[in-house]
Image (cartoon, rainbow, N blue to C red; front, side, top):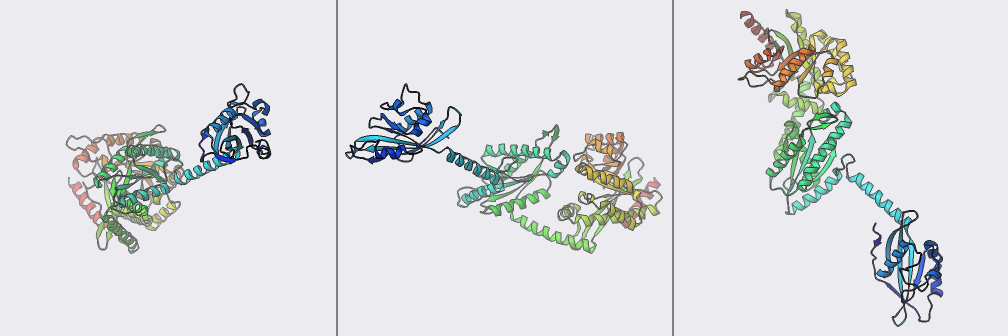
Length: 588
């Protein structure tokens, strides 16, 4: 608070009789006050003061009588000297002054009143000055203000990042959309959600995950301040930006691309190099609405479809999303009916030994035959099943079919092979997963050693205690474990040596290379070399060309699967393909 606070009104005047002395009746009233009081004559010479003045200043009345401020030569405390000089200079009725006590260094707050006395003819007859100690009241006011500020901060700001929160954003968005509706501007709301942030938390820990959020919020803050936008953190790994003065969708698209580029730049967290991507959903105002709730809902819808379109992408809301959402709702209803109506069946794809050409294994893959739309791609129904929880009964169904297939193959075939199943992490991490798997094996009359469970490397790193329990349970049961889509997640070599991993599956993105120059990807070579060093079998998926198979064979990859040999097919059709394949191989 400044040392001198301006007053709010002019000096008051109190006319008195000329013969009346300031020290008479009126003076006695002032001098009896507990506040600090002093009186001056018409020439501003010190006339008298009360005992509170003497106690506070340590100066007696007789030392000052007849003198004018600033009382040079008198041992009057400097803060009182300045205080009185200000009071007399301003000639205000009321004012507030903050001074420092030289003994304690603390601030003392005074409310001052100066009354100018006049004779009946209007000539000055003196001045009465009163200083009321309001330090306690001022302290309470300051504490109340601080408490209000703290409550405001808590109500409208995110404690981790210091950014405005959803409540604050809603208010700003209402203002911006109102201005836009009046035709004075247009803008957009961008909702940003970090991709696979739960996997980052599970891999590097929640404390490091919080550091990631702080780093991303810093980047977004810099971008927002540079362009004059309003940034908020909503919850978890979600942010939102109100962007002003757009000329159209092209501007929104450029903003989305700019933000995604800035977010995805690698950075270190506790000596780990991380790359984080995000998805963005945008709604435009006034085009898409004139209230915060509507714009937030539309940005949510756009974000949902951006997430479904893959990572590190964006989507602007339009009316077609409403139709897509309706179709998704209907598809979800059909999904539930199809599970009950047994419209899901397992298809099978062989794994081929790249050296001998023999069938070395089989993978079971769930397929949906919709009664009206025909075959629905897994990329459509698997995410929907994950989001709705229907992946649990679907996973049990494919595991049951895999157990029956393994029994049929290995009971009647001259060379037993393992049948692998790729289940959802949501199902595998259930507490009752091992008993459920035992039940499927038992009911099908299958042997556990005929099965192989494929899990992702992110799952391997997610929950150490739960993974330990799972691995022990599978080992005791006799079911093998392989790591699917290896090289695309957050893996640790120590996990590969800690657990009894049967095989690593190279993701198809590392298989499709330039066949013309005969060079497989560096990542594929590294994975194969590492698997060989660890004594783990290596399987390449997604092979479509003979050249790809040959390159992988040359670098030491053990097995491959893909459309080069055949597409996944129902059990009966698969057995017919096996007969043709083995007959052709025997004839060569």
